[in-house]
Length: 487
Image (cartoon, rainbow, N blue to C red; front, side, top):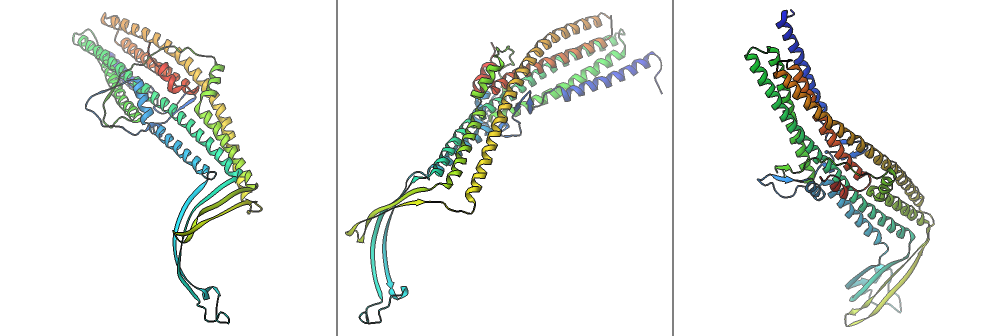
């Protein structure tokens, strides 16, 4: 049964309005807040589920609230983040592999002292004395003893395979060192993004609290006017729906902010349960940018991941040369020197020296297999290097596009906030004067909320674009602190 009359139409309009506001609130709850993982623009942001989202916590939680600046967060992340710690261990492992290959070229020197006692039955080795003139000669000799003390030396003189493998291992160690520097840049990107998201979350909480206060004031005003008989009940109902929608958004904003702080704490290694506050605010400073060509030139010269890829190609070339060198002869020398005798007082110097030329003839296809595998690895390394060149070009271009778009977005959003606030003020004045109902005020509040969200999102995107650009040109660790400082 449909409601009839003026009151029925007002009630029907209130229900429709309630459904509409609930839909708007739900849409903002699900879509307005940027994701904590994934990517912005062209630069992939390390996921909170990967090693760069974790850390090795240091110390114990204190009972005080720790003020955490952007610089402090970056410094803690560079010390405690799991991604950079794991890459540091990879660098140590590459150094060990280098020394393992180098050991094949270095001298192998050892010493041994032996004191021997023996008794030998000559018959067991086929020596028998049962015929003249040796008949009656004892077949058992001993017991007897002797002392042997020597130094043993083995040295490769010419081995092109081992020489090239050492050179390849050295290039791999350099690649690991560059990868460690790249890991530090990724930590800056991950921690910077987490801190900026937390700042945006804090701004959303402040905005939501202000919107709740505004909605509460509107509801109180509508209820007072209804009680005075100068405002219909639908105005009170409409303002109450608006208040509850804003309260719901505040709950969501506070919960998201708490989780964003937890993600930041995990990335920088704060002890579990350590309370902290963000001491910095999201700055907005237009960045003095270089040309695209200058940024690309700097990126190819400074990106640690690109330098690591170059070293990996060189390492693959060395290992391919080493596999080819298996066909070549090799020369080594072995020798020993020491004393031998029945005892230490009755001994004499002894030595032996041997030089060996080894010429490979046939090893069942092993050398051919090693060459094919090394060649495949070289081709893969070269292809990955070329792909990375294209990725760097893409990263720089998209970072610049994001930076330009975000700067424009901030300017427009800032103007929109001012206009929306002015509209809200006029709507409230009109409602207080009885010129219109509070629907105009509710719509103005929605415009203010939308404008504030656009401004917060634009400011976050602009600052993140600075971090992405610093990462894209290989200047993250030094540049981010400079880009995001307030003037």
